[in-house]
Image 1 (cartoon, helix red, strand yellow):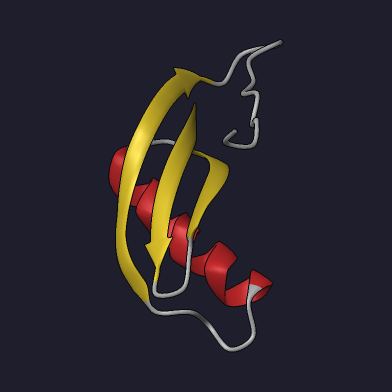
Image 2: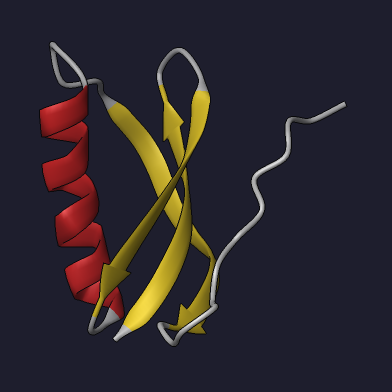
Length: 68
């Protein structure tokens, strides 16, 4: 299992999504599911890319800091 940090370019803004998946293709499938659940209506995705991928082990994580 891996933790993925994804950058998603929407029509109006760019967001970051952190999720867990077994493989890259599955991560993008889960991304779509999360966007459908989080946004109403579902936003148009211009593009999505994997910024980082880490093994999901105890203590693994990401720090998300706002751009200055």
